[in-house]
Length: 176
Image (cartoon, rainbow, N blue to C red; front, top):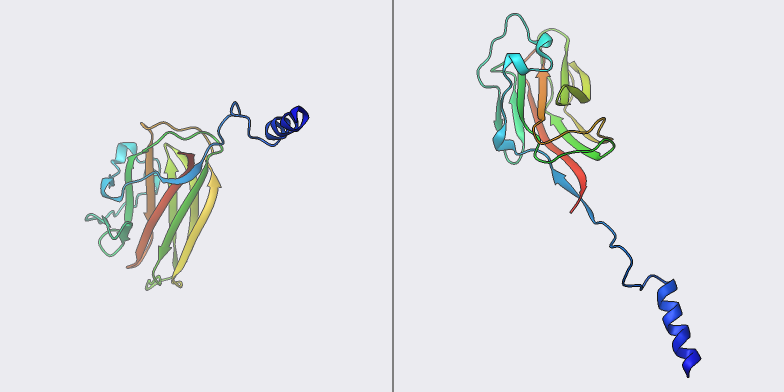
């Protein structure tokens, strides 16, 4: 009878039922942005200010729209919006981006430039041909550096033509 008890206790310890084992962290996707918090990026803090056109024609080009940020280039030929990072990030943290756009129109062929920055660091960017079809980008990538809550997230967009762009998601896979 004693040997049977020893076998059960030894089996529980070997198979992970030891109460001293550290808990396994639970990771989940956490939003890094609040679409109601976007503000125009001032020229002096715009990390891509050199992209601003000389003939900047702008009314407020962006607005929150159904849990996303809509950028409408009918009202502005250049958009840069920023907000503080909601949580700190470490180099290598997993990030998720979701952005999409309607069919892109322009009287003359051109291209758009989309970029997402943390501080002055470009996390993702893409050049998109105009005219062009509607499309979606769902990306996962790693944070290129560590960032604190005092660092800014900036969404940058410039294009030719009257187009609509939707920036929906920027999340990090973090411990709960």
